[in-house]
Length: 396
Image (cartoon, rainbow, N blue to C red):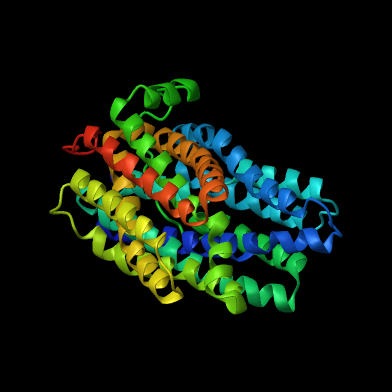
């Protein structure tokens, strides 16, 4: 499944990366301010519980629907899935701007999760339309676009929430998501029409993916990896309260953003490391992430934590890109959508597991143990990664 010209492949990557950038900017600009909407509704009791629920609702429905959307993309194309995600989430964001009660917001977040998957669909598109020699580099560009979006988003979200309010910001986000959904069609990116799209049913496509032992091993490491990344987020603001009580919110945002900066810097570099075996790159990045995260648990100053988080971003770029390329090369080209769909369903559940596990550890033993819990998940993924074999090439 190849594009007819190199220039078409380049155009695809840059246009898809642009869509990923604006979609990620919307996600990261709106999500941090949803608890403010609860306060605006007049919610006074159980606000922490409601806040946790509206975040979890999105992950759970994403986990349920992602394999289905991925399998559908194998039969009907990846571009329609990007449009479906952009328009579906655009509608959900628009409806959220009119939510009057916490339950309505919870249900709409669940709806948003059910329609989500723009960035996974974009990664799948690039994996399916890239030549073997450019696969790592192309995926690294998409990863960099997502990282830059995650940096710019909170800044734009803060400005928008201040001057427009959360509800109008949601409407603005809805409009931008509609644009992201239309972008692949408006810019004329090319998707190959060859291959046996109708060869497998949706059920059989998912079943074939789940029978692939190598993919299951990669999915397991991805589950632990994403759980580890999420693990420290629920307690990070509390750590900042201890280290810098006067400016906790500012430093929390800075610690979040600095990973995006180093990930954006590292992604294009990692994409060019084609001489290093993928499995070696993956294992090294998982082990490095484990060590750096454990060290963060011992950080006793803002500066030391920022330095460690910045360095972590380089390993984050490497393990994310290596994992995506391993999935693309270990799966059949006719079931790329199912491969990435199942993976994204599994890692959505990993996000729920990671935040729960670290919360229990931090609550029982102290905030530093949230970092140690995260490090233990990275290390478990590192051990499992030794069972993953180096792929010779992508399967046609």
